Image 1 (cartoon, rainbow, N blue to C red):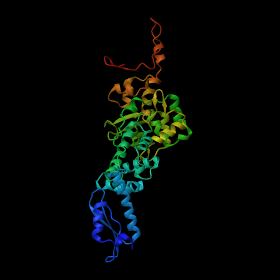
Image 2 (image 1 turned 120 degrees about the vertical axis):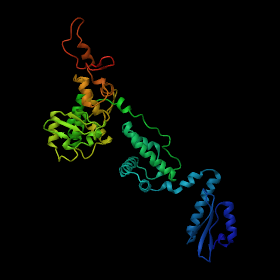
Image 3 (image 1 turned 180 degrees about the vertical axis):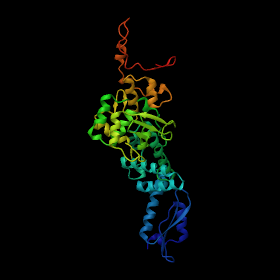
Image 4 (image 1 turned 180 degrees about the horizontal axis):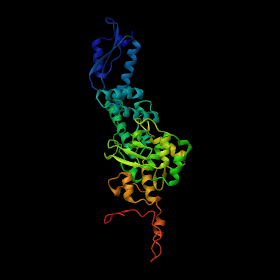
Length: 385
């Protein structure tokens, strides 16, 4: 029996009051080992019970070390509160967060998407526990995404970070001061693919299949990614070459009918499915798009901007302008409400034949024989030119 076991019980209690933790005490009447200690966070006096002496001494040494560090000022109350919870497997913490979202009666779609985003982030950053959770890893994970998609994912990951901090898995919230990107930068700084780049993208042998059709519809029909994802076979008239967009599937809530090229119509006819089925069961993620650009030997960033997935819609508008299509027709095909949006954001000047437009004017006094391929624009006085 140790020296602590021979001391009286009142002395053990007084020892805990003064030094925050007492040495293990054996009580023969109960055949148990007891450790009286003062909780470092709540300051309440507590009593721990053990069946064997080794567990009691291990508990005592652990708490004695914590209180010694607190007396020296090397740890804070918050670090003590987190303690071993910060070393729990991150998968277990995510499971608890999933249960918490269920208890708050969040929608199943929201819970599923949040779980998917956080799981992907954990896989890419290779975090093992909440202690490894850091801002740098989140920033690297979100770097390939466009500002709009990155903000959606960051909002989901920040909610998870706040929850871990509130439930004592993190000493501090590393994403507390992380700012969102300006949405719209991906439109202003996105570049359109050239005719040669788009042709390489469609004809690349490694991109054959559903992704090829997806890029083809986006780049030659001007569809948004959300509209392509909701497209069903009965919306496509393969005989006449038109795609109908119901009001429930369009961005502006208005029904529209858009023509598609004959070669695209033939490619869709070869892959035709049941009328009620979706044309695409899944959509290409940002990383898949980046890999497809590499396969087609298309640079992601140039001096003109970056080739985001949304650049395919800008490619559609720019190629129409380069072919001399009137702005009014382009606005109708892209289903824009404002011609300035089409002319300013969805037309890439870097791909327009500026020199050809100037040379088409001819010499002084001589009327140009040919019309400029780029004679489209917008004027506040005259409207659509």
